[in-house]
Image (cartoon, rainbow, N blue to C red):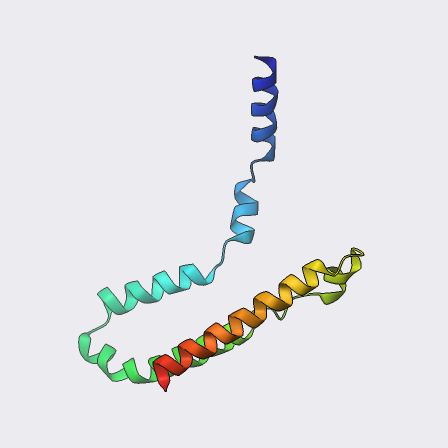
Length: 111
């Protein structure tokens, strides 16, 4: 029974605080919810219809920028530093797979 209590105590000590959760929480989710509520309940349908095309263009631009930015924070020195190049090769193979899959999907959807 002592083992259970000590592991439960460790679990409680390892739980993140509310501050840590807020710091790591992706704030864009709140903006998305706010924009959805605004366009769904507070704006007139005529207003929504008049700006829909422009917002769709901006949405496409931001999506393309976000998608192409995947992996830009990768530090290749850290991947190679551990005297093993296995993480480096796994990363490169995964990115290559991602690029090929994205290309195929883009060709199917847009071409």
